[in-house]
Every structure is written in C-alpha cells, then in structure tokens.
Amino acid sequence: MIFHPQKQIANERANNQSAIYVAQMDLRVDLSEIWSLYEKKNKIGEQIFVKLVLPAASNEECTRWIESKGTTRRFLFPDKTN
Image 1 (cartoon, rainbow, N blue to C red):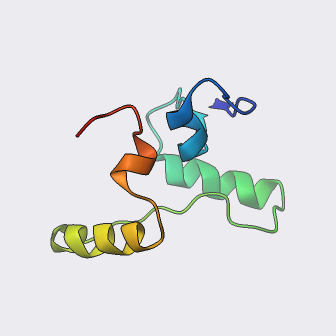
Image 2: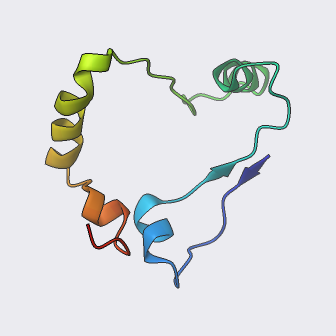
Image 3: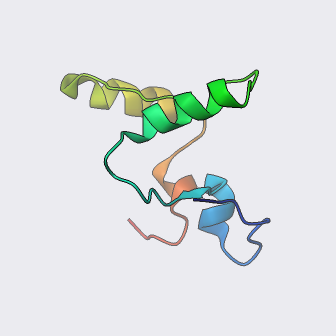
C-alpha cells in the first residue's frame, strides 16, 4: 500500500521530505523485487524505486554529498532542535 497525501500544509517536516508512505503487507518478498515487477508489468518508462546497498564506510561521504545538494538534517527535521 502506498500513501501519497496531498501537500501537508500543517506539517513542515512532511512537506520538506515530500513524504510518501509505504506499508509493505507481505514481508516474504523484498520491496525492491515488488517494485521491479510492478515497473515491468505496467510498462512504466521510468524507474520508480532504487535500492542502494552502500559500503559501511561510505556514510560520511554520502552525508556530505546529500548536504551539498541542500538536504540537511535541519531541512528534513525542522521540528528538531538538535
């Protein structure tokens, strides 16, 4: 099940994150496999879902890259003070 509510004006965090909520009901299959099958079955011309498996040591490098694009913890979690 996918929930993609209209703009959540009252919730800055959800708006900044462009929130889409996924509830996986059948845990026997990996979510990436389900999305891949969905894309093929429906002949979708764009990739909807990407599963990234990153090396453990890449966390800091990934964080720096994401923040360089303007996506910071403060932007994603405006209601958090730290």
